[in-house]
Length: 257
Image (tube, rainbow, N blue to C red; front, side, top):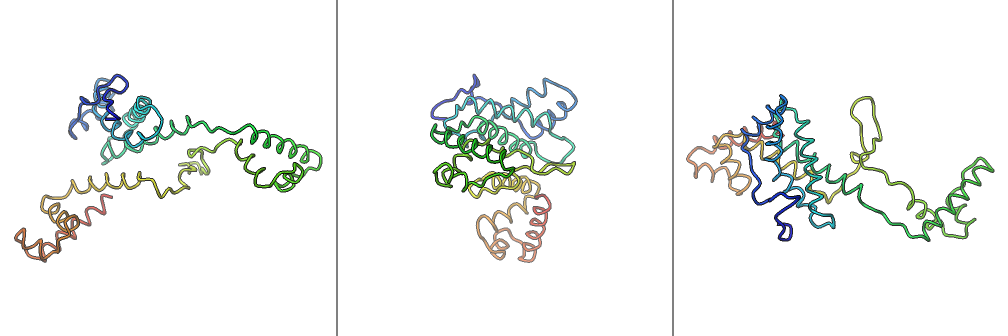
């Protein structure tokens, strides 16, 4: 694991404990009521979840020990903020919390290096812009700045962008007094698998709530590609019953998701 590394932050990852669904539910209730021992046990019992998430970032140059610690911070936040009154699995809530914490860490520790020549051009451009703005009351365009400095417009624009403060994906772009809309909410990354991953978690939860016969029919129909007639013959019921059970199962899944 992690190129042969089994111990992270002094924790032997090969012997991390696991909790059953009932144990998690019981510990979450006790934690809500202020039981710190239950809170510690709940955190310890979910470290495997942190471990599975940070594996997705293993290809980066960051220390896995650091990512594990940051992931644990996300887990602790999930434990402390989880609403036990909602009909939601803890993992469904904790996964995006842990991912978000890791991504914030990677964002904040990403050092963007700008060459000296680019910085100097940017500062020249800024000084000229300030002078013209002060003298005329009008801000010059990038083209006017470039012509005055004897540079290309694209070089000036790129230099000024390079020294500007980066915008955080978590900066709010709108707030009407309720929930904020962040920069992240306005972007779409076709390459990210987070949304698919979370949908798969929700799908598994929905499937868990089906009856055994409904699970069998969904599995045979959508995972093994069998027709309703083939399923009816195999499990010994009519095709009409298969159709009715399949429709009921899909309605349940849609409501859950």
